Image (cartoon, rainbow, N blue to C red):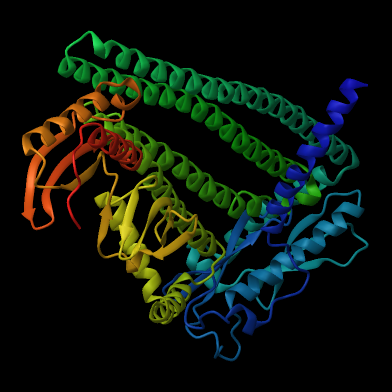
Length: 584
């Protein structure tokens, strides 16, 4: 019962795709019609140029006579050249019309042969001093006049009328024998059996591909789970290493400890990136194999269907069409899909080489790791757009759709739209410049004009900020001219306070240095303070008092928390040491 359900799921999944491929193949075929095309229909495209089936050789034009079974060329008929098919001279017949008449008569002969038991006989007769080829199924039926051997035919082939008639007679007689052989019930049953064998082989191969893809899907899930687990372990290791570095700062020299801590953090971060990249490569290889299996499935069904069509006698007339347009269509989109995968992998490798540069500072590596994600997404989207447009253009050209007119119309429409979307184009260009110049990135706190907040989203068109009140502010990139980045690599607190003239200035500065050293020595604050706060001294003297300034360098986005803590300690220390604030 379990195998039955698995087989049923397999059929439900793959049969629709196989039917889609069949429709693709058959839908691209030009089905032979039982009527002669009108002259105006055959010359609607360009009256001065011959149709695609006609070859022009100076004063003569030729068109092929094809087998109604598989459309293979038997021989060419020749007529004088007609330079303007809108004005056909009286008494002349375009060569494509003559060839179409002969091909239609061959189709009638094939229908009679299927119903008859005898092989048709091709004979040469004479009409108006010109040889003609006739076909009869038996002696009691009236012969079908197939083709007249004309002077242009003999002149073009460089043979006499009789010799050319005998040559064509042999070709047609061999074709009649092939008609009879393929039209026999035994031959039809044998070829239908071969077609069913091909179909069975396709189903078995499809089941194999389905099982392989299922195994790859399970392996992909395992790799993704391992990827997430490894990220968690590396994050915990990085956090533990930070704590150890902070705890050891009490027994080692500060400068040596700081250098070692930064080096360890950068090495840990680069190791994390390398593990991410390695697992990402394995996942990409897994996805590539699944992608290859999908195209193998498409190609397998295409070849199988084409083989079935070329095997069954009633379907053989579509063989040439099956091996033409559908194959080119599959080749085009296979190439586009392969180019997409190659370009995506190249972009990811390039972005990884930029992120994993060991010469960059640790903070810069973290920042680039965030920025390259946005740049990679934009590049992938642009490359995908270009490749899909190229694929669509090639597909339209394949079906003889005039792409030049589409380009002209698209240019006019694009020119008209450009007037109404100048701001959009400016947004996109300014967005690219923001990413390339690294003005800010997601996670930065910036100020644009009178708007400030945390960059929550950044793309090529807009920048979204979240301010202190929780409001989401959306700013078009074209409106961004001056940007103040408050968290690029590091931040700073510009602490200033006015103290009264009654205080000893050296004592005030000493108290501020003690507060700075105490804050810097505590592990909780040390990890977000790259260096000891710098007490600059007295910056200004006025009637209100002495202005004392302190610069505190912090990790990005930690300036507010550190500033609040430093102000609290200054307030407590001034009260404990009886230091008076200046007069306002």
